[in-house]
Length: 314
Image (cartoon, rainbow, N blue to C red):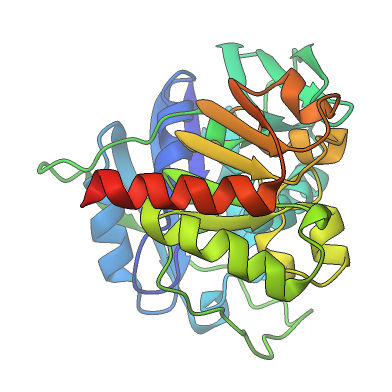
C-alpha cells in the first residue's frame, strides 16, 4: 500500500496542514509527497525532512505557481497509477482539488476523515458533526481528505528523503489567478492556535466584540474566532468564523463567549481539548459540551477574568 499526499504551501513555506496529512497517511502505508509549484525546490527540500515520508515528487512549471485546482488535478491523476490512496488535508485547497481528482479517476472520495481503521475503513462526521459514521470501500483506489484537527502533526527530522523530479502536465488554461488578499495579524493563525477566544452575537456590536475579546486574547496569546451569527452581524470578518461552514479548530483551550452552542458552531470546535463557556443563559446548549461553564453577564465576567490572569502573570 502506498499513499500520495498533495503538499500545501505558499511558495516559501510548507503549510502545517501537510504535516497533519502525512501523520494520518502513515496508517495507510508508505507515504510519498507531491510538491507542485514554480521554483519550489525549497519546499521539496522541506517536505523531504518530514518524518514518515519516503519520497518527494517535485513538479515545477509556471502554471503550477498558484496551485490552481484545474492544473493540479491532472498532475495528480498522471501520477496515480502507483498509489492506492491519493490524499490531502481537508482544507479549502484540498476540498477544491481532490473532488476533481476523484472525478477524473472515476473512483470514490471519502472526505473529512477523523479516524483510519484500516486501508479501506474510515470514520467521518455527518449531520454537522453530531454523528460519526464508519465508511468502507473495496475499490482499488481511493481519494481521501483528512480533518487536520483530528490527527497529530508529523515532525521534521534531519534525514532527507529522496526527491524525484516528475514531468509537468500540459497547462489546462481553464482558470487564471487574479489576486490574493491576506489578512495581516500578529495573532496565531486560527486553525493552528493553542488557545482560541470566540465571541457570539450576544456581544451586541463590532465595537463591543473587540473591546471584550481583545484584552482576553492578548493576555492568553490567543487567536480570535466568531460564531456565524457574529460574522453575519458584521462583528467579525468572515475568516474568523468557526463552525461547519467556517473553520474547524481543535485548540488546547477554547473559550466561547456569548455563544449559544448551535449545531453549526459546535461542529467546528467540539474536538477542542478543554472548552470554557461564558453565557448568561443557564440552559444554553454550549454548556452541554463545555468542560467548564460560567453563568453570568459576559460584560462583567470577561473583564474580571482578564484582571485575574494579568495578576497571575505579574
